[in-house]
Length: 309
Image (cartoon, rainbow, N blue to C red; front, side, top):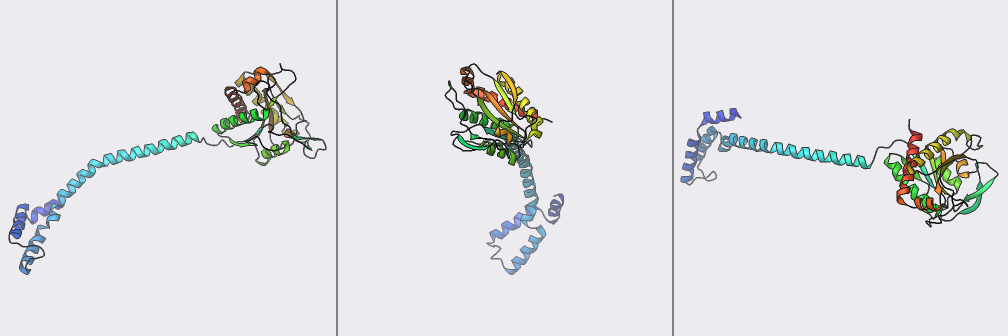
């Protein structure tokens, strides 16, 4: 910038140049209407003066520099704000979609709107047969059917688990289905699942019976006895955390080989009996959103505990 101003000072002053321009205008000359001599003389002075535009270039450059200098912080601040906004949005997205923890859970909301009494083998290759799926029990106080209650809780559990980063697969999401117990187990086998949670509610002729329990196979199960230790650990964890979250009566982990939905499994499995729908007090509790949330939280805590390193 300093070199340009020095060049202009050496070649002529603005006063001389402006006087020349005024003289040309008074003589009625224009760049297009000049005579050859005038053109040559004017061109020579024009060339020596370095051209008005060139002469004024330093001041224009300075003004432009000032303008850029004044707006640069504003642009930088705007860019920082935009960047900050993008980072904020990105953070919100991460909160909405937590990173996957690498575990897959299959949830089976027990029963369905219409039972299917057609027989199927109680286990792979078994000669003993059992109904494909029953209709389940119902609440004398709430009026809910077991298949309705189990799906309510399964959906809440799905939400809880997904918030914790689990991949969740639902065996059913509606009531009007026809899925046998062996087919439900196959959903977990095909994935394969890290845990298969089968959600049920109990019923009894004794209206005073209450409390939760879980069910798994015995060590001698002919179909999947090698999974006993894992299924027993899963059942223990879920029952302990479920009763802790709800405050309900803790019954036991029942080991049995009579459940076809367990026998067909090739992954760790437990059946969760949340409580008795034939007990007026427990039935009324299980029908509430608040208590269902507690059940879901307890089961989720049990899965966390089972799968923790």
